[in-house]
Length: 623
Image (spheres, rainbow, N blue to C red):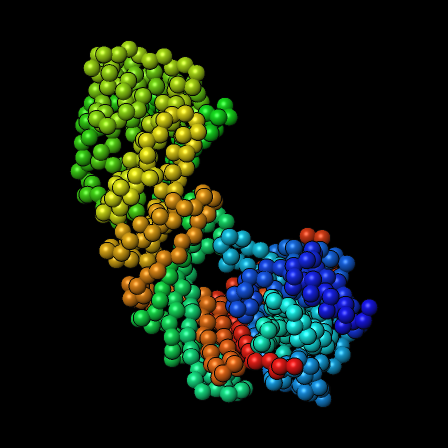
């Protein structure tokens, strides 16, 4: 089979989605593999946000069927840049010699001087910012820079002749970065009547703002090729407010701001910028002011799980006080002051004081069963729980203590204590699962009231808004599992709202709006280890904070269009590169064996890395 027939057949199968694991083919002297897969985040903006690509790599035996499944912990060390789609000619090979697309624009693909390519190379894409996947590195096997131009030209020529194809998935070639421009990716985007070309090259780092290209320089670069009458400019910048190095175990909060017509590179957002708060919530994050509430919720969930499995993970006490001693302290407190006596040092109950940790574990309307939960949840065994409940009931029956029970408290413990105080009942028989059911019930009621109390502080929500989360549940196993799930949804929402107030100091008037948004989202989502929220803000409400925040990324886009000819130049500036090269055969072999160790990563806090994403689209000639 001739090269052109082999390439045409493979591309047709890929475009129609009829292949599994990729197509291996020979182009001239080279073997390549083309696979259809999800677009990696590093290419998404250059790929016009399309979800899939055709990825072209050098073929090696291990790549068949697993073109991007290899993962590694290689650290980032090389910045990325994307240059203008028109490449200058080198070594006497002109662009005209490779104009095989039928496009009125000259084909940017070029041949460089042949150089030996003995060692395999890998490009590692670091997805540290991917909230769903965490830190994942995708490893690609690049085509030598001395061969990529010819391969790209043949693929592009074949694409131009596929007139009966309804869908043209963008095609990306992985390069080794060894040419003069240090090309890492080469893109071909086609539709039935347009053709777009992109080159991605590496560059940097820049050690100061003065070394960065100016906005005027970028404008000159953008307007240098093709007709340009008007250039529209816009910026998207991200700022880390609460950083997280481990997205799986830690929460984070960042701001994304968009505005038009920037004056200089790295300028602060304009007052009329659109701002979005990106809140990533991991319930187990100990940095959260509401972490103690989550610990109690986790203990309650463990008890509920024990009803089904018959196994309970009991508390391991760290201090010297026993449960009986702590109960006696409660009895003494009730006798001396009464459980409902307000502490003199407590100056009130508002949301800000709560998130500072002063009121999360104490409410003015806490009753006896609430305090019992806080103690009995730390029992170290079933027998200790049973003995402790007996101790409580005997103390009440013997009139050693007369606790107050809220009139709406319908728990078993509350009812027993109320009857014992009135002399209407006898000591209950604590058999089988009864002690555990009693503990679960008072724990659920206590935590439910805690969440209601903190959400309603400052009029963040109404009772009607919370009703879906706190509907009455019976004490059977399935209902209690569902009830605890609902409380966890409330906790996720609470942690998100607390983060907004704590780290952004948003105006109080806007907090109820964000609380409503978060609660509504939690009604629709399944519980998982982490949840993310994107909330639109008024940029003026956080504008003063930009002076003290360092941008994570700052990206300006220059766009112009003249008829069917359009150009887009994106300058992406960050403090961390997101592509690294592994340049030795030994490293490559270690990577395939899963033995490559994580290197010390330069965080780049004192450096800037520039990336340029340049896309040129034009109308194709009609054949």
